[in-house]
Image (cartoon, rainbow, N blue to C red; front, side):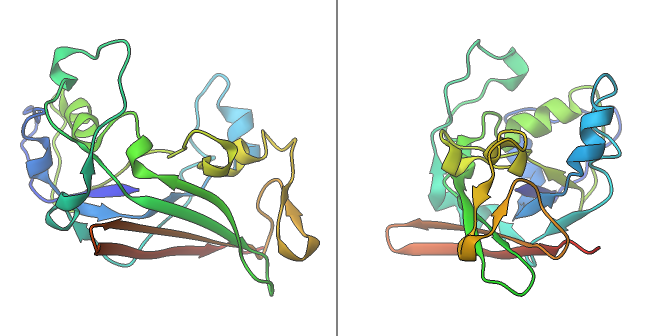
Length: 212
């Protein structure tokens, strides 16, 4: 997932945890494509960079914070306690159902992961407060991604590298096909929606295909 900034700040002015959500306009589905073969080489000791900076895909429209209000939920317990500038009051997480599917070229899709945004350890307000605590400014339209959203079991892991245990355990797709990592022609579709008390808010689909 990712959120869109809707209120700018000036360089040198941090955003407090209390005011962080005032600067967030809404959310989209976000796929941060990763080339794991490149990333595995560079992240020791450099950290991921070229393996992750070549492309991203987002869903077609922004779901506003007002639309998400009915779907607030409790955050996970943070231990050890966070520093004072990241401590918050109230429900800052959101109950957003997530689904990821793979469709090989010319074949039907298989759902490989079902997770939820509520599992995020760091909520959006904390992320924005931390991002700006050193005075970094933000502008309207800036997009900030949440990072991988993984649940508590293998069916809810948020990345192929987790699901396949680093390529050691192939996942079973329909029609006797398997994958450890993506291959040319594969289409990844991510879906997200909120649903509660007869109300449903959808994010559409975030779709991308691996080209040779």
